[in-house]
Length: 264
Image (cartoon, rainbow, N blue to C red; front, side, top):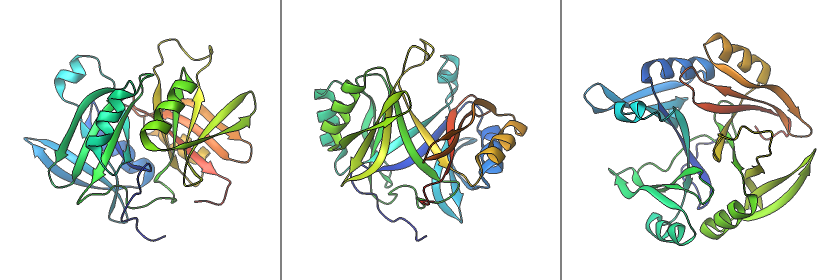
């Protein structure tokens, strides 16, 4: 598949890991997904690492500042959505009830970003690309494949993202629940589910990143052998694929999925 040079407005474009241990985290993910890496210095013995497939950037990671670790902030993945104008989105997001955590600000010549907490408490970033537009490979194995919002108020979440980004939404009935698809130009680009009473009370609203894999079971076994924790064992979703939720050795959660839809 050809490289992606640009991401349209409203499309998830980048994934970034903020981890308690950069060295061990890098070893885990490069082993798990057979990724390459490019360590870019951003301070004394501090690096912003580009995680790569075939030499192309597909995600990134860096070590969390010590003061944030001391404050109890867990390791986590952050999803970025491409937008045409970050500053306009910042104003609109605040009007819609979001909290701006950081930005808008330039990231050197790479682009301009905004990090926000949506009205239900999920954190997400917006990206106006310049020299760096985002992930260079989509729809391929071992790259970000799907993004899913877990929320405690699906109506508030749906109204927010549709108003902010111009997304459309569609209800897809599934076993025991209504799953919400978010669409851009009629194409599904993300999903949403409402957390039930079965979810622990202290689980916050969050965006989950899914990575496409050839075999869910093989990756689950490999992740466990590398020190990861299998939070949700390999499970089939009819007509969609087989997925699992994993926590890396530093505690950051992510999902993997073996699609059966001939789209990888």
